[in-house]
Image (cartoon, rainbow, N blue to C red):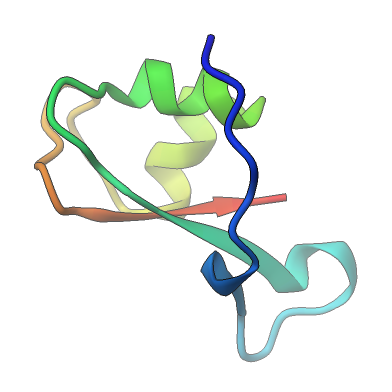
Length: 71
């Protein structure tokens, strides 16, 4: 797994959120990435990524798609 430094410009606030759930990262999907790979990179669950982003098919994401990753 690639070790990538976090860009602070990618950190966004969620309106209406509270506590630790009030912040998330935006990950822009790159060619060849999968939800599983993205989840592993950030240490989160694929099902959570799907829920947070209203993704119905774990095999269907697009290059350039912005995915919220809550930390």
